[in-house]
Length: 314
Image 1 (cartoon, one colour):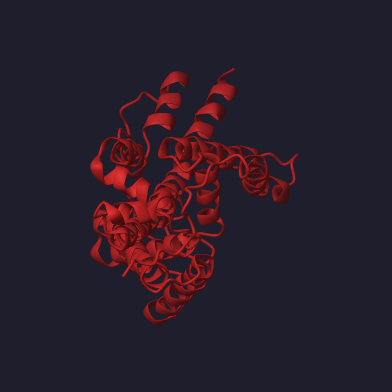
Image 2 (cartoon, one colour):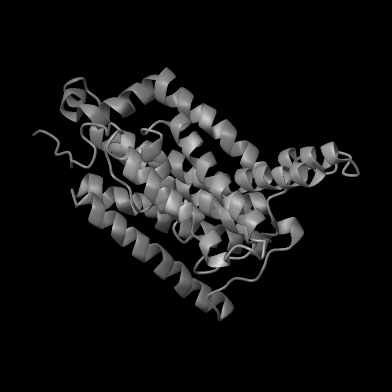
């Protein structure tokens, strides 16, 4: 029983840790997709955020400055995507693919210049995002260890759950959210009401990049503590899958990210078992992603104008 509770606590801790960057990326994807712009460049934006957050935290010694700069790096690539798709009317899928190639390429080149390597120097404990409530529980007891595993988590994890509530409120309880959703459904009708669809979509794609950048910074400033070219492999696409699973709603994306985070938590626990092949264990999150897409992609209602370039009337 004690071993089960300890394992459960570890799984829950890993679930929250691994779900956090996915959820930042998924919230960003919600902003872009609901406004009517397909953004499959989340992966590239997360990669840019991961590198920038790590480098800034390393040089400044302040993890929060690094965290915000990671978001700004993602917003920069979001702006590039917005210029191409919203202002110039480029194919949104191709533009997103270009971001996924451009982001890693640029940051790896900069890493080579700064560190003479494609890796950054590992962060120290003071350069990582801090944990909240660490040391508040008596770890000499089973219950205390369980509570410490679950609640002594990184500050970025608590922030992302607050972000889910804020994004939900913005989407469904504010005039901005009403206009945002309308731009993804009937942009021509929005124009007749005096709503600047171009401006609204441009802003939402930049917000999408900012949140994705924060997600990337979470990966390298909590989980791996060092940027590597493979730090954000597949996580952007998993975040998009979570959005599809959640029917393009922030609270639905939360459930999807927790599901994928739980799969990663199982991978952590099962990884210590020699009876299961490690390669099979590593496949768990990606297999679940494929299954979710097969089962739910046809049932999700995509915003009516999603993926369709908007040309302002003369």
